[in-house]
Each structure stands twice: as structure tokens, then as C-alpha cells.
Amino acid sequence: MTSYQNSTTSALILHVCMGTLLAITATWGAEPSREADRVIAPHPTQAKPLLLGNWADPTILKDGEDYYMTHSSWDFQPGLAVWHSKDLRSWRLISHAVVNQPGSIWAPELIKHDGKFYLYYPAQPENFVVTATSPHGPWTEPQIVGVNSIDPGHVVGPDGKRYLYVAGCKSVELSPDGLRSIGQVGGGYGGWKYPKDWVTQGFFLESPKFTRHNGWYYLTCAEGGTAGPPTSHMVVSARSRSPLGPWENSPYNPIIHTWDKSETWWSKGHGTLVEGPGGQWYCVLHGYLNGYESLGRCALIEPIEWTADDWFKVPDRWPAGWEKPVKVETPLSDDFKGPQLGLQWQFVKKYDANRFSLGKEGLTLKGLATDPGASLPLCTMGMDLAYEIETQVEMEGAGLAGLMLFYAPNVYLALTADKDGNVRRQHRGFNRFGSNDPTPTGGTRVVLRIVNNKQAVTAFYRDGAGHWQSLTPAEVDISGANHNERGGWAAVRPALFASGAGQARFFSFTYRPL
View 1 (cartoon, rainbow, N blue to C red):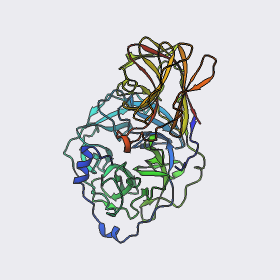
View 2 (cartoon, rainbow, N blue to C red):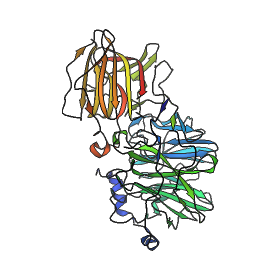
View 3 (cartoon, rainbow, N blue to C red):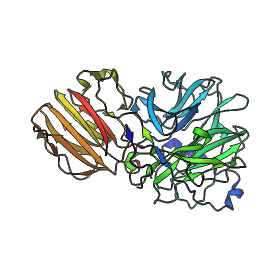
View 4 (cartoon, one colour):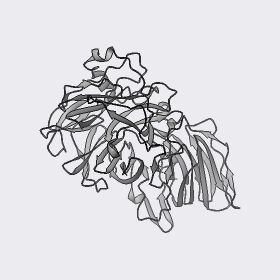
């Protein structure tokens, strides 16, 4: 079981062409007079983490007493990991919704309609949808919706008609079964006019999410860009009596925002409202932890309250019960003795069932490519500021195998072993120190350990006498492995890899928070 050490730990890459075009074409929004005379003051509460790690663009659904949440999964397969909770405080992985989806999966939308669960998601340049009778799966094969944009958001009108909003807050009508568009992308919401002297990444009107409350349709969106300067992102809202507008901007905009780079969480935005246990409402969003951007955009939560005139805002304080950190009930360690890979595992780009097998001897993984970074490693997600990973591995045939902290094929740190039991630390994309020379361990089955101590990384192997030995240089700084430095919307992930013509046998994998 993994838990966060501290729930409030202190601590311009351009958008893709689609996002840029939407930012250029979006309008600043109506009703500027009401906003222009208002003094915009920072709000009092601070976000708390739901999931540390790169769980960006969260979409959350309340179904009775159950909560389900998923996120962007980019090029990792299987994709769209679905989490379950009963109380918003303890989370467990229950399924993946897609396998080997072509294209990079960005911000999804999870909803329930007429007893069926729908998951809409963009995988450039198309939008797809999968359905299930339970979030536990199985999920159907993906179907193309027929809308080319990002950030889908689903809403149902009072007449039962279904619509999908996309980035730029434009809308398109869906077929009654919700599986395809039946019209052209049309008008929608123009956004909220934030002050022109605010430091953001750009306008980038995105992430349309809907809430029905007291006869109003509330449209909650993101503005300001999701990376770049710490004060870039924000959550804004508007309401209407119709899912198609006209929209009235909230007098409390921005609902949530990072006001200064000294704050714990940077670039807070991409919010979705959800009613929590006991009728307390929350906004689930994402943001970077100050000083730890290598984690990616973490899933966050802030409370909200409804006002007497049917708006919502953040309250003066947190409700009771949030004093302790949120827990993750899915273990990241694995003995590989189960009938299938655990839900914590994802391959880079391609899930190939013919490439690996599980048995009494652990996980057998066939080598691929000559460089460890290009070997499509098997990754999990680091969910603590400091942790160590360990494995026992044996390489069979030509090639290398071992542990890795993976950001991208050209940005990684690997601790490798060959068939003779020689170990080596090598990395790409980090500091000036190169890889060290191969070091014999005295056997062919080796035990390897990587320690990520708040982005300071050290590598160890166990010698023939059972003692831990470190490899030089003593420490590698990986803090530069983040989107603002490297692009890719990625994060540093613990991983296992096998490269070359042989195959590796992994007898265990251990993840320990420090």
C-alpha cells in the first residue's frame, strides 16, 4: 500500500496545432462589464493531492456511493486506467478501458447515461468512445465519434438530446446512442476574460465539463494553458438554463488558480465538479507540485460550496476528515506469480502479449531494440516524492536488462545487467556524467536497486557477499525531466526493460516509499 508522506508537501512549450488554432479562434467571452469592476482576490483553500504522479486531466464520476476516475494515458498501453473509491480518500485500480489505441490519448470524459458507462477520449486527431455495463469492464472496442478535437465533455439536454463539447467550448449533437456525431461543430461558450496582465501560457479555452444543479447547467472549463509559467492554468465556470447557452460567467471566476509561484501547486486547472459523501461538493483538477515537475501533473482536489444565488466557489476552509493523506490501495510491487500482469503496469506505445509470459519463475520479457530507452519498457507510476525500486533479474542471450527511470526514449536512467552478471549505470538526457564501465557482480542473477530521493537518483547492485555497492557518479539529478524542459506531457516512471536479441527473467519487483 502506498501513501503520501504529506498531503500538502511544499515544494513555453506551445500547444499542439489544434490547441493553438482553438486559442486563436476563441473569443474572450460576454458580460465583461460585470467582471471588469470586480477586484479579483486569491481564494483561501489549498489543493490536496488525490494521486501523486502523472494522473493529468482527471475526469470523475459519482455513481451512487461509488466514485470512478480516469486520466490521460498518452502513449502507454493498456490505456485509460480506471480508479475506484468509496470515499474519495482511498483509491484502487480496477480496469483499463483500451488496449493498443492508435494515437496519444489525451483528456477523457467518463459519464453514465441510461445505465451504461461511456468513456469519450481524443487520440489525435479523432475522438473515440468505448462503453461498458460496469467500469470494471469489459469495455467495448473503440468507435470513432466523428469529431476532430481534444477535451470532450458530454451533456444531455432537457429534451434528451446528447451533445459533445470539445476544446474551444464548441458543441456538436450526438446520436441518441451517443456513439457518433450527427451534426457540425457549432457555437458554444466564449470563455471568461481574465486580466490581460496575468502571466499565462495563452488563452487556451479547454476542458468543458458539465454539472446539472438546481435547474442550471454549469459549464466548468480551463483557461490559461496547462504548462509554462506557474500561474498559467485556472478553473472558470459559467451557467445557463440550456446546455447550448447563452452562458453567464460566474462572479467568482477564476474558481481555482495558482496566484503566485511560491504556492505549493503550480498550473492548477482542468476541473470537474463532483458531489462527495455527505453532500459536500469538490472540484477534482490537476497541477504540478512546486519543485517536483518530474512527477507530471498530479490529480488534486479542492472543496467547493454553493452560494445562496446558485453559484459555486471555494470555501474559507477544508471540511472535516481531510487531515490524513489520501491512500492508494493498489500495490506497485509485484512477484509476477499471478495469471496476468497487474493493473499498475503499462508498456510504452505497444502492448504485445507475445513479448512476455508469467510463471513460477517470474516475468519473462523478450528484448527489443539495442538501446534501453527504445526497448518499449514496462512502466508503472512513481507515487511518492522519494522511493526506491528493486528487482532480481537474469539476462539470457545477447542484450541488457534491468531497472529504469523512464521519461522518454532519449531521456532515461537505466541500471543494466548482461548475461554474465556485469552491471552498469547508463543514462541519456541528464547531466554531464556519462555511463560507468561494466562491473562484475560474481553471478548471473543480479539484484539491482535505484533510489529516487526527491529527484536525486543513486544506483546500487548487490555483490557476491550480499552487500550493496553503489555505482558512480554517486548521484544524478533528474529534476529536468519534465514537460517544460523536455516536452511530451510526460513524467519520470519506474520501469523494467529488456533490450537486444535475448530475453530477461524478472523474479520480483519491489517499490518502497521512503
